[in-house]
Length: 99
Image 1: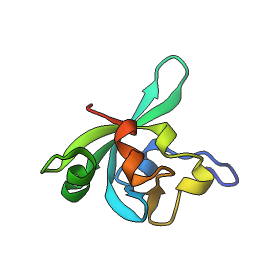
Image 2: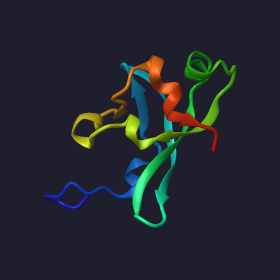
Image 3: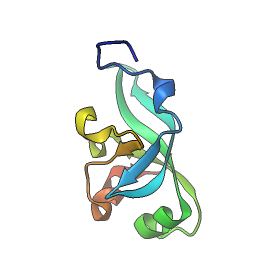
């Protein structure tokens, strides 16, 4: 991170843990950028087995693409432990899609 700025390098986000309602649901495995606007649009995440079952009904770990809108502003989402999503666990399914 550049001192005194709010910028962050992509590699600082890769492997960050992702939480929803204080439950660890997975980790970031990749970052997807809109090629025209140069904005981050999605995180590719690997959902933990338990989270994948609760959210998607799948009985194994699964990779999925999470819309950045589920994350919310960085000032609220970034924690010392990882990224805390700003949506309810019950709503998370609408922010996910297969890669």
